[in-house]
Amino acid sequence: MGGTNLDECPECGSRSLSHDTERAEVVCNGCGLVVRESLLDCGPDWRAFDSEQMNKRSHTGAPLTYTLHDLGMSTIIDWRNKDASGREISSASKAQMYRLRKWQQRIRVSNSLERNLARALTEMDALSSRLDLPKNVREMAAKIYRRAVEKGLTRGRSIEGVSAASIYFACRQYGVPRTLDEISDTARLNRKEIGKTYRFVARELGLTPRPSSPLDYIERFGSELRLSGEVRSKAREIVTQAIKQMGVTSGRGPTGICAAALYIASVILGERKTQKEVAHVAGVTEVTIRNRYKEMVEKLNLDVAV
DNA sequence: AAGACGAAAGTGGTTGA
DNA sequence: TCAACAACTTTCGTCTT
Picture 1: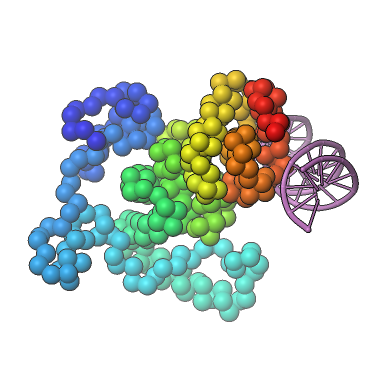
Picture 2: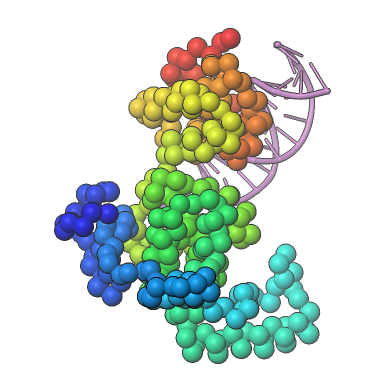
């Protein structure tokens, strides 16, 4: 980001910016974009003379320090007396759970904010590297999470859930969306929970999600399907056209539209993929592709006939 | 045999009273 | 809070390549 003074958000143009001196950030109230973050030196405090020092010192100073001390407490204990599949657990386990929770409670109150953040940051780190996310996304997710914790929004919610929600949000803001399905799969959390948490956090923090566009998915799905650049840009063209002709895309899931466009493009350019393949990659069914496909061909006068 | 097509019933989420 | 509703899925039978 540029070092100049900004008084409006480059993303959405909003002039409502929050200056957070404690974190040395300027955050847009409209879209949540971190307009300017300056300034804290996140690098090592001292020069390192060998790799051991490097390891230790490179973690000094910045929030990254928080990611260290987990002490093996890598499991959050849910407040429900249920096991993973939702069944009641035995009374012996309940007693144990009670002790564990109590213990965890004690640790929490002693140092709750840092501890919470520490867990969340490692969680988000793992998640985002498995999701192949660029660093700026990861950082935005961390910022969101931090604000959520400070506002007490994590109370009654799992750290994992809020972490996943933050990541989901950050992805969409940067136009590299992952679907809720992908995130919930990767995080081994249930989709509904993440969705709910996501909406809640966004509302409470006054963040307006950037609506995700089918265009955002083309590159990723396209490369996963090993489609050529021509096919992808054809698909892009089809989507753009479809968006222009209102009614074809509104109310439809972006992944479905993207999938259909890719499928059509692959057929037109003779690089045919089966509906099944495309459907699988895009996380929709063949039926949905067919429906979108039909609508698009109809309204855009595409000659798909071979 | 595999892919494409479409009808019909089911599912989960949103909306509006 | 609940019912209506649209989008999407599941399932299944049929047609096409």
